[in-house]
Length: 639
Image 1 (tube, one colour):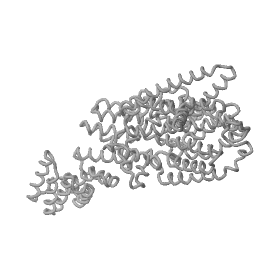
Image 2: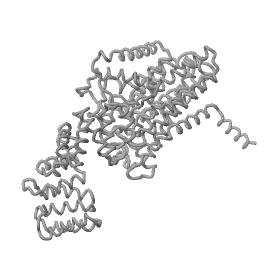
Image 3: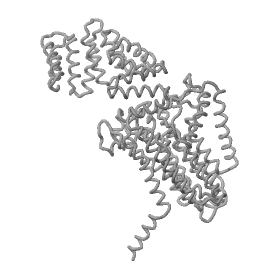
């Protein structure tokens, strides 16, 4: 009898509305994002994952928490750790494959959806709203979470792998709020601690998390007071009234700002974020963001067209930006008025504006003026506005609930299908950049990346017009100049390509790709004197690049011109290359041998060339090494 009772209890649990909704949310996420598993690494995924050594191991932990400078995940240790954990739990293929990281992103998104459901449900059962919504809090919360889960705007945070920074921040922001709400009831200390832990992890995910303590305070101000009902899951008005009883929670949440401060201090982004950009003074960025925010709102309602990289231009004048500024200011003013008057509906605006504030106000983020992933959490406010508004209207007009349920189901189906289709644009770099150009033809970065993707597939002739267009659109963009210059040189037109490579090196003297490409092009064209200058500069910037060290050492040891050769520097470079490769790279050992030969250290040169031959594979390299051995045995410098 006892076993029968347990089985009956188990099945009753499975059939509860809440459990069914959780299953529906997870299933809907899997269906809508199943097409994302075939997505490629794109844009910032490359330096943050493919080229990063930090994701290759969980030990030492300090390395797993770190990331390449100026990459999307630098200064975001929580994100870096999850990427390393993702790799550790996968097959550890080299180079990494996208599939495991896509699965990881989807898991984060499902957890965020379930947490959003919990937040909305408990908000609708709060003292301020229980009288109106308590009887239908579960299905309404489920509807909002479902539409949020499958919304196409979420592809920017879920399918674009490196933007799990946004998804993780959203998850921990929602968890912080959920735990803070639960801390109103029983086990207050446990939920308070969990809220602080969630907040700290969020601070290590993305800087936008700075607003989390303010979101919690706003929720308490708007929802944790009023008349309760017997079914309300929060204490009576007398117990909940006032913010003073929550002082410990607020102090704990505010303390997590230290985590964020340390992260920002350790990984600053002077090349992409700050107030020092001439084209982007704070007022122009703010005015531009008014139009961007209206665009976000439109996409929340009609999610098309979606664009990976907008290349959003600055507003030309405040007059032209005035309509957007007035519209956004009006929405903001209504939100502030509602907040002051403790109108619960104002929380939708509070959450929307607070989460967008760090990236969409006065602090210029010049590399990403507009980005759909920023709407990961804010789109929930828009969805909740329409779902709850529709519910209130249907109740007043006595529209059957079945009609509302059908509307939600249809909307979820349409949004889910659009998400499934959008994910397929990420199937390859070529496809996603072609899609971006089709929607934003004047975006130079999209042209550059599409050109590079075409070159990698051997379609050089197709890539050239896009790179030329990029240079025409952005003549002061070093990547555009570099891309076109490298393409022209690789197709035997160095006379045309060299000016572009020189321009790229002038625009950004720290651009290692531009400098090394220029050095190689100059050497190939016979201008070895100038090539040596750029090779030296490149080695200073990339002292552990074995290929570069060997190129520079070879030129310095074998150049025909006496004023170009520098045997001592060549030996320094070659010794470093040999050390970095553990003495197992025949090319590095060959560089060492010719450097010794240039210095007249023949016995050491013989030892190095013999070692090179012992580890060299059969083929052209082996033949070349034997020629060098004959010259060294004859004490004849190699030129």
